[in-house]
Image 1 (cartoon, one colour):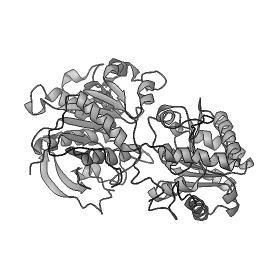
Image 2 (cartoon, helix red, strand yellow):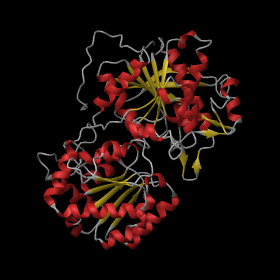
Image 3 (cartoon, helix red, strand yellow):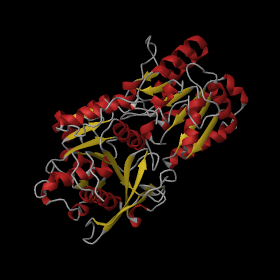
Image 4 (cartoon, one colour):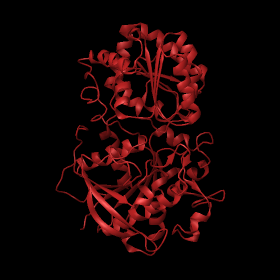
Length: 499
């Protein structure tokens, strides 16, 4: 079987097949948008034990592809599915990917994560060679796929297959770097010369993300503001030095929102759909949320605050938990959906027990509940200490749920702060609980003015963060690497996000 693709995406998650966060959402829509624009694109991702494939029925495409890591004879099977016409390839090796969770359990990261994702990177490259013609662009994402850039960088020297292939690496969250023991480097298949300050070495540890940064031809992040922030000590997570050396090859491209999934007008999870022209459905959705979470009906007349995200300090969940008693005094409702640090999960559940008529906490994550909170809440909270892009604030804008967020990364790239005449939400500097509470007080005052609040909602619902705009930016980035679309039989035009 020979398949030829100009652009190959390599990533550890892809919605709807696998998801822990925004990475999956991006891989679920960006390649598909490019495919719909006429580009020859495929995605390569792991075949996890928990994989939602029922609608798309993967079938065996290649068997026993030699990978050669960590043992010379090791191989991978590859399954293929068509995701609305987009080819998706799944790397299968049961002992690495057939697990309940993708990266970790509540006890911590899997001990063999380094081996798992070195294997994945090498298997992805073996698959690309097996498929026939070399790709023009290999676009890898985050630390799990970062070493694809390193392998191609060094393989070009002795393997003509990769001679005309360019690499792009997208950082979705610099804080997660894939740092491991130096001993794992020696069996990775990378040459000795990769072990330098300008390679994968980081304070005598093996840093996979750093390899992606140093060896990719072009490095991108998921918002313009985050691209600037990571060059600083505050947000650089120790890699600001190496990022500065790549600053001329570093660019920020704002993620888009997948309005085929996140749109209250056609959202399959909602009790009643609604839109700018027919807004009454949001009231029905609020009533439904209150009933599902067994909150008191009187909250129909009070603002409900929604929080969806990992229960970690990055997302500012601790700031929200600190002000819960003050919010109860204000007689508002709070709904939290997420999982993460055990201490935050325990604090959240304790707050629910203390204030059952104001607080609801759902530990875990389901798509259905996330959609219901976006539609049923009145205000959406994102008090993040850093946020590379953020997607949930884009969703909340479309759902008429004005966000309150910190002025970091993609949050300040997507929210016009009150009291600007074009405001769509609320922004505060310096993530502290007191600043969050003061900004919430401003929002609660405006909430009482129904006419002005409706104007705020309307401006947010009109905001357009569709992936077509972002895809155009990625196409320009590919073109900067010398890529030109070869297939002249199609005339790519910007198309609707709706599948």
